[in-house]
Amino acid sequence: MIRLAILGTGNMAQQHVHSLKEIAGVRLAACCDVDQARVQAFAQQNNVPRAYTDVAALLDAGGLDAVSIVAADAAHKDLALRAARHGLHILCEKPLATNAAEANVMVQAVRAAKVVNMVNFSYRASAALYQARELVAAGALGELRHVEASYLQGWLTRTVWRTKQPISPGALWRMSAAQSNGDLGDLGVHILDFMTFVAGAPRELSCQMTSLPKGLPGNKYKGVLLDANDSFVASLRFANGALGVVHSSRWATGQSNSIRLRVYGTAGALIVDLDSAWNKLQLCCGNDMQAGRWRTLRCPKVPNIYQRFIRSVRTHTLDKPDFEDGWRIQCYLDACLAAAARGRAVRV
Image (cartoon, rainbow, N blue to C red; front, side, top):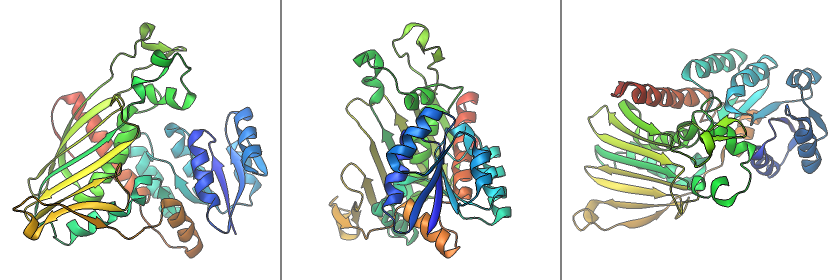
């Protein structure tokens, strides 16, 4: 039996509970949140026996094997370091930290503690993404020439100033530069991992981002300035000179959660479109190249992040994506912020 605690009981925590409860031999032993009413409601709803508002008290009480960190980004480092000191295995929400320096401290801590550590890059549960990575690594597309990736949502076009409904706390902190890295930190972290998992690491990148008016007086809601970036576009150069573009926006009208990757090489091309399917990709190579014909490739199923994490805890083996992967993506996020501030490309 793997005894696990949920640290942070906001909206995303429910997804962790749902996924973990589907795995045999996992028991949700405790939960913690600074909001007493919220953590008690969460514990009652999910039959969690112990609820805390103080993480130190939870950890000191013992009786745990692992934690799932689902708190706000700024809390990830402290919670992970505390859990590592107690010898607990850690699944952490993305982004791993608020900057690469913090993420590196977390990497060193879990290495020293020798605990299983993983980051919830949830879209790696796509079988098509793994197949795309294998095709590129095997040289099926030849030498890469161009890569394009996008992550589009449209919820800013239909939120409070349109519907007159309150902004949820989970959405509000994502819109504040004081509390998050905005669209870049929320969606960019996923799409940068999605792209580089298949195409490899970029050598340099440039970036532009913006925060557009929300239609509220002073661009504030309940005293919170809504100034976090809500769209970004980054151009990348890979080691072989190939170019890539990755972009994301919360203003993509009509889009709920649209993720797409297109990879073009000298011997073929592929498309992964999660709106269409998580277990299929489109492939154009070989004799199909000259005619521009595409065929659908069905991909073998892969375990999701929760299944891989619990398997790793049970077998005491490390799996991916781990904290080092989270640190690497955080380096890309930091580079995007630096490039946008300087108005020029930066090396990664």
